[in-house]
Image (cartoon, rainbow, N blue to C red; front, side, top):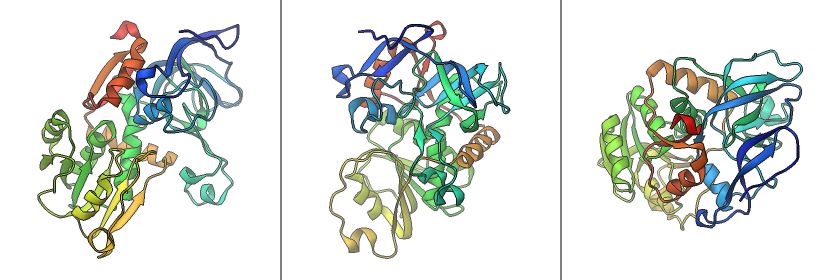
Length: 346
């Protein structure tokens, strides 16, 4: 099924048609009009776009659409092919990354306090504006990141959301130096955050239902890898829940040592069961959410990833099979991060 929004210059792209289970085909491939870059905008030729669980939540309707027929994708690696008026930070030919956070008001109390991720008027790539499941994408220059030339586009793409959000979750879980970290779920974001924790001398215990993910965790240096509902071999100072499974919240809280902190990294979570105060929260255990990221998080993480040589495990898909990539993500058939590449490169 194809779509046409308007005549004129077009791009190939996937859009979310009618949200629903991935088996119903909510992603639709066709051609869509692309506007010329406006003031402060960059037009990118997409080299790679990561496939995030948030894209799946949007396609399946767990997150309500903000606009009809939006192109998903917010882990965009591209080359600047055109710039709008007043662009000063980039020029044609530069390699640039477009990420989830796309815009903030800059004036509210959260923005002024350095908490732009909480801005009530924040906007998001692939939700409020078209994203990177296309051959062209518009990105505001003030929310774009310069990317290194030497690194492969496929391994850069997951850093732009999975990496940045995992990094913020790691900071939100208040992991002490040399502490004991539990990681629940081990997909795109978790396998990157775990490497940062290991580089900072943490002991990492991975809890996930996927045997392949457990094998990857041990390969990357985790001290142990068990099933998602297993008890880790020692009490945890901190934990991060990456799996969007509310049933795991009490499991992770019960695994914390006194004063430990659990951070929930996802934008969507199934319902949390009732908590028992004595078992799950007493002794000053803490429960925190993670909401988007600031641009400083992005800059800090991308610099750190380059410095420590973070290893990105990639499952490449041709652009024409974006629907299959989402289906495999929904079925937990992926190890690491799915990335869409132009068909000629796969």
